[in-house]
Length: 89
Length: 333
Figure 1 (cartoon, helix red, strand yellow):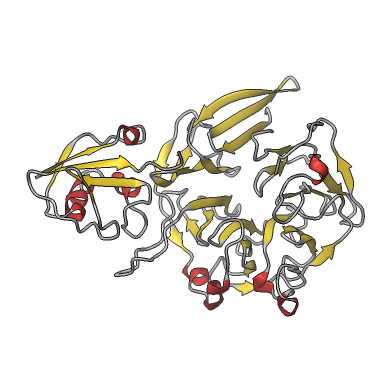
Figure 2 (cartoon, rainbow over the protein chains, first blue to last red):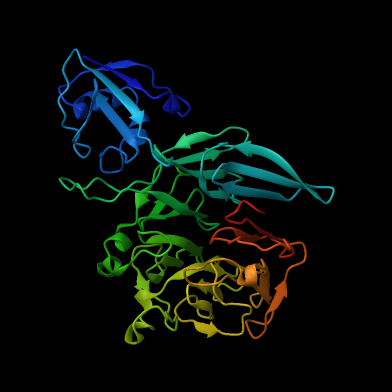
């Protein structure tokens, strides 16, 4: 399972420690995590399930390409980082 | 009971209390976070705060103990549109309004893009008003205050809480007499000088900046419109233009006296692209005769050149009608 960690700024709003999520895409991994942490979903995804405009997700060192369907592949040994996108200066 | 003032700001929710004739800063909540709407529900004392966390989206919170503690609630959200990557998502809760006295727990929320949401359970869940969202003419709405059209004013008639009047920037005045099951376009007589002449009186082309309905005379609705000040005596179906306002009829906010429908306050500014107080002098104007004459009020307001704008929801009056509060875009209050 991929290891997923979250920006510290998110921890101010809700608990989201480093967790492991099952799945072979970013979407699958995140939704696996949402099953245990439902409140997290609306912090990362908008009403249509797209990545929020100012949230950035990396698989290892690679910024994901598909922000709408989160279809970027994830392997068991990968690390997923959920960060804030730099915006607003 | 001491009078309280709740101020939703870009940097948190501030509370002030009137103690011994002085306003004293009290509790601060959500410090550092943008609070886009606040509602104290006089029916049960609940406090609601809508947040717009820049990175993490729109959030709703409720306090059942006057703000001592808060609990996050689900925020209004558009239903997922299958297989559509351009489906809507709430980007701002623009206004929060309590339902009628006979509708305990009911809350209305107006959002950007222009969704009307209803909670029947004190914010524990929300439903999009499909009748308005799917109205064939809703697609004629345009951006006004923001790039997307939005619902900023929701008037619940105190005589009949099924009667709703909405103000949409920019999409006119919308009226329901059945608690939102069906909608019709009101606002006849509103005038939009920014439209081609043949469309200037088209009701759906109007940009009402804010509506204020008089609680004791709900047929009276004052409208601060992009194009001026308008007055309705028939619950929003039609309006007449008030041309006596000085130093300008442009502005965003309006407040109506709670027991005198002929008294309303406005904050004039220079339109359209300049948007600062006329002559850089921050003043409030009041009419006490239904719009025939206006008086400028400036005692206690800044004397130095001002860039303060008072946006739609940042002007309010207390229940006695003897105290106004306003907050400016610069942070002045």
